Every structure is written in C-alpha cells, then in structure tokens.
Image (cartoon, rainbow, N blue to C red; front, side, top):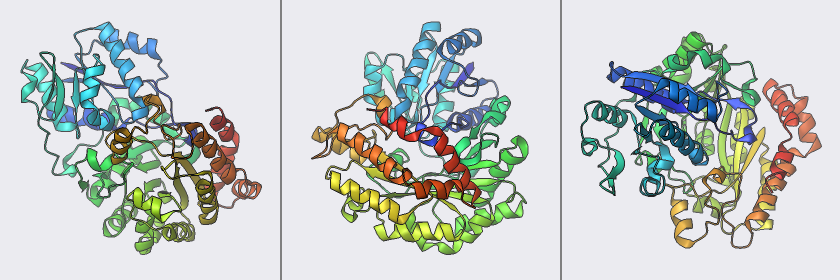
Length: 474
C-alpha cells in the first residue's frame, strides 16, 4: 500500500508577500501513519517547494503509482487546487483512492461529495486516527462503514459515519514528518517576517480554541475544545527543528496562544535549552490576554518571541459584540503599547464588511488603526467561511453573492453590507491600506527604524507594490 501526501500547486496570500511554509498538516498525518503502520509506503510531495506545476504533478503520479492520495486542504481558498490535484490523480488512475480533510471539507462534506466526483472519502475533524483506519480498511479490503470520522458514497448515497473521538494526549504524537521533505527544508522561508535566507518551520502547540468568534471555524472544527501540548513538548519540537534542520524562524501555529503560566513555562523551556538567542518565534495572541498577562511579556521577549499578531478587528463595541470577540477597543491601544515596551513587533488584524458597516464607520476604523499604531496592520474583508456562525447566518439570509471558493481569502468581498456594495467594500479595503501605509511619516519611520524587524518589514513592503496589487483586484 502506497500513500501519497500532496501539497498542490497554489497561490499564496499576497498580503504577506513571498513565503514558503512547510506543509505542516500533511507532515503531521504522515508521521502518525508511519508510526502506526510500518508496512505502508509513505511519500510526501510539496509541489510548491519543488516548483512543480500541474503537468509535473501528473507525471509524478504516473511514475509513483500511489494507491491513496491525500492532498493538503487547510484553507477554503485552496479548494479548487485540491480538487484539480484529485482530478489529475483520477485521470492517471481511476482506481486510486482520493481523500480530503481539513476545515472546509469537514464543514461541506455533504455538498462536496454531491458535487465533486473526484473525492472518494472526506475525513471530518481531527485526521490522524481516522486516516490510519481508512488505510487499514483499504489495505485489508474492509468496508468503510467501520471507520469513524469519515463521509463517503455508498450505493448512490452519501454516508456520514459517527465522529472519531479526539486524541487525548497531543504529547504522544510523533514530531511532524520533516524527514519526508528533508531536501526542501532549506527552501522554507518567510521573506517579510524573517528574511529570504532564514529557514522557517511551523510548530503546533495546541488544537482548537475556547472562544467562539462568529467568523472563525476553529471552535466548530475542534468540537468546542482546546487541547494543548505541554510546555516541554513545545520546546522539544522547537529545538528539534532548529538543531536538526536549521530552522531559526518558528511560527507557533496555535489559533490563540493564550498567555499565563503555560506560556511562561514554554519561554523558560526555550531559555533552558540555550536556543533563545538563536531563534525567532511568532505567536497569535488575543489583545485581552496581553493586557491581562503583561508580566509574561518580558519572558516571551527573552525566549525569542519577537513578533506577535493580535486580532483587534474593530473599533466599535457593537461590532465586537456581533463578532462575539469578548474584547474591548480599549484593550487594543494598551496591548500595542505593551508589546512595544517589551520590544516585541506588533501585527494587528482589522476587519471591514460587517452588515452595518458604512463609508463613515470604515473611516472610523482607519482612524482607530492609526491611533492604536501597531507596527503593521492587515486589513481584511469579513468572509463567511463554511463551518462558522457567520456562514450560517449569511447563507440563511441570502447575503452571499460570490460562491467562488477561490475568492474566500479575506481580500475579495463575498457579500455586501446593508449600504455598501461588494465593489465599494473592495475600494474601502484599498483605502484602508492606503491610509495606513500611505503615510510618509510611517513609511520613513519604518524604513529608518532602529528596530531591525520594523526596518526590514517596511523595506520589504515598499518593494512589493502592495497598493497596486490591491487595486488590481477591481
């Protein structure tokens, strides 16, 4: 039995510039399957790292002849890339078993199996145990009815088996299978954040989130739970990526790190290993966690956390309440100040496109962004991702005007507001970036900053033509 895990050819989110991350989700699955099934031959193909197009992929599948193909399918905007890879696999070998998973296909399992004949099996939710059982069933020619956590077709009907229980101890997972892509490790990088020559790895410290923001699919995908690896395990994985593969920029991929005792323990573990001065790590943290746990920030900075992203989202308390963010606008300015005081680069996300948004309310958001003054700001358009409360409301009320999954990237307007058309929202997004990055003082202050991260980031942004790229969306 041969299983091919695949990162298909695809476009990256241009707002973050040129970058190439390792395909963490399939590396985790490949490592788990390898640990459970010694008899299975495992191959991981990263088309991005190996600069392979669709014709190259077709030739690769022809030569490798996998029995099962499982492409990475994390983001909704990559849906069609996943489907195209499956179409190619079926063209080469109609009998190959095709498996997809991830948040998008979990949330759209019924319709995806109805619409896309190239999909054989959808793994819903957490994939390790389910994928292993699917492989065993295929290898032993057993019926799929015995495999929990999957959706598939049987006798012309779509079948949804009961869910697979979640893993109880994430520390027991093997390290991601970076050895499957060892030849690519020197290629993984994030130019804007760490530079083109600094090797880049992703670290999974936890799964899920206890918060239930209406636009985020994490809560529903992980069953409303939050499970974490221990501080020691997180630091072990960081040290492994650094010492074995030379990865010095480590992105902690948790949807929300949270602060407090566990984060402090992670920082202490990193320092204890003697790698704090050798690495730079990044995390996503809520603004209220920053303000409520300010005493942890010095330890984060000491351990190499040089960059933090926080979702400020809106200046309007009513909008934050609609999003179920459970933060206050006042948290934003304090959080940005605390990060700067601790010499941690601050990145903020802000969202336009809530149903009540107007030209005036978005102008107020622009003023708010300039007042709270993060080091960089990422403006996005509210996007109804499948699996979210927002999607259910938008679908039920007929707000969705664009059903092209490729546009579900938080840059294309998918639905209008009560007073703004989608085209007007696109123009407002452009104006948000123009307002924040068009400031000569901000640009010069960034390019000539004494902070090397700020200096490099603004130099890089200046070279990318961000405003032109946004204008080209019209």
